[in-house]
Image 1 (cartoon, rainbow, N blue to C red):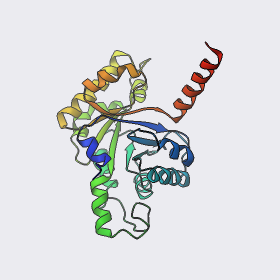
Image 2: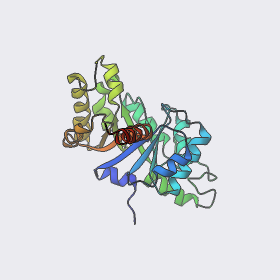
Image 3: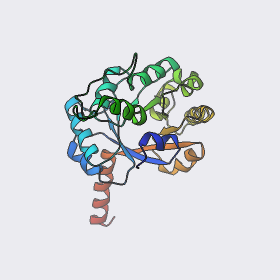
Image 4: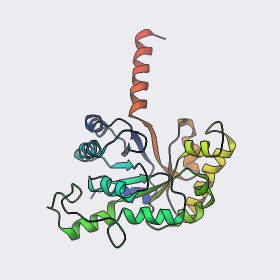
Length: 252
């Protein structure tokens, strides 16, 4: 039996994924054929409307590729829509307190005060999946990742890390850089903030993930406990591929 993304995150496996910034199901289908462990549709910073998000998730599911959605906000309807359309889980931006972490965890799961049930969704296989089976599968498979990127979150990080139902803390290093008034993600105060998140996550037994712009830093953050890396994006792949082609053609 194949392990779920949720179980792989919980086990601390080293996982590599990338962001998808282009709302294109064809592009998702292509990336779904790669050996990346997962992909994350960036509905926070890219123009994913509800229909194209649905189409992209269909394309990734057809390739058997785990798919997260970084939702636009913590509003529960965004999480509901992503999971109903078949997302493996959600990355929720700007989680700043334990209470907020509890709310986003509840919004991703069925039950009192949580996600509303519909059997007509892709996730429920369009009424062909029995309710009990769908409820059990959702509980066992849905991933909830809290993105840590604000000063308020740093102040409450121990409490956030301790919240049941949060599968991983994801460091939003660029937003932390801005929030701290730093000039670069490499500045000491930013690095210390990331280290603080890693320490709190480790103390709570909570996995931690991050985006790293400088790939040479990856071993350092692996040593600090990070196990989930969402690196580069489809935009990055296109730019790097084009630059490499031009360089080889022109011999410079």
